[in-house]
Image (cartoon, rainbow, N blue to C red):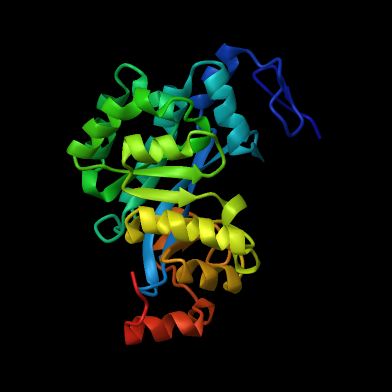
Length: 281
């Protein structure tokens, strides 16, 4: 069924003819909500942090987040789109009473950091919601990092203020190694295209082992895990954090305070190695 909003025909995809002004108005009309997905610690057998994920909608129909933010880039509205998403994430998370216990990972389009006034607006939002810089991890999408060097000053500034930086989607784009070296992120998130199938792929296993040995072992996160065998293989590489449907689908903020992870999901050998302390770092 085709829906109509502000004169825009919508049939499940944003029309290529969508005008910049129409998209700008959509950004500010409550067309986006936030869900949260846990990042799990294999060693602690607990939720380490949450990632805030944007879910744009139009007339109640979901829009793929990549489509939404690609349009923001196309129309040079990334800062506005990011700030709306950040406001939603911080507002919802601050109400959960979890912020003092677990960090929140927030996605930011890298070029937004270069927009005038963006950093000041971001810091104001964090302060407004009673949160502290150390509680926030800013995820920079690696696939859109065309030149990491242009972001270095902004990243250094954020880190001096106490924010932590995560390099997202490592392995999807072409600036991975340079971004790791120049930006010195606190976390690297290895893209699902590399993680999925690691249990049956010696080459994937070797690559992730190398990444874990390069980075701080507590700052490497495997994304997109969906099977116990992949979680086990990740753990053996020295990667002790993971995220994916194996653990939990993204959930609404009001679920977070009661969310628990089924103990059956934890591989027995992980429990053994944590208790015995025989996993080398």
